[in-house]
Amino acid sequence: MIATLKTSAKHICFGLLVLLIVLVGLRSGTSPRGSSTLAGLTFLGGPTPSTAGFAFTITNVATSPIAYLACSPQVRSNGVWRDVQIPLGPFRMARLTPRQTGVVVVAAPLSPGAWRVPVLWVNPPTLTIWQKLRLCLTGHFQQANGDFYTNFSTQVLP
Image 1 (spheres, rainbow, N blue to C red):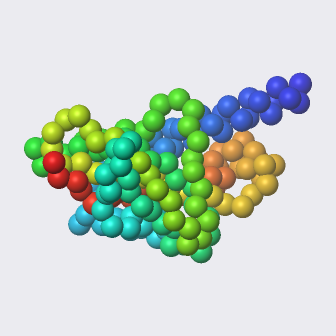
Image 2 (image 1 turned 135 degrees about the vertical axis):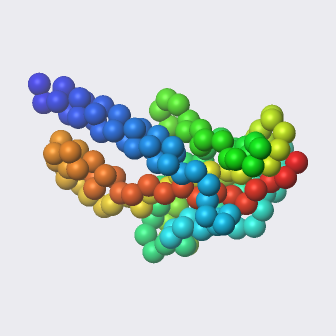
């Protein structure tokens, strides 16, 4: 009985997390003035061609760890950036400790035009699983998972 309740609570929290990420992605729109920095995640330089696609170097400039998820490249068409495409199905967010650097590799989009890489990230709070569960069950899901942000790489021209 208790194991079933725990499993159900995990499914509810996971569903709410996916919904929150989708809502953040829909609200992201364009980055202000092409900015690639927001509080914790920074893109270092431009893309580097690699055998698997294009590599972007990112770093965590915050004083706490962050979790991040690179999305599919976002293409600009007729001067408007298309919606952020969040991966479907289960996915795992990578982590960066303070001042740690990582690499995001993406394949260039097939459609022509300028493109950029959106990266969703969050400063995960340090709560115990029981504190997270209590917050989820009382409807305070955002407090259990932190605030999500979206940062964009500089645009890549064909």
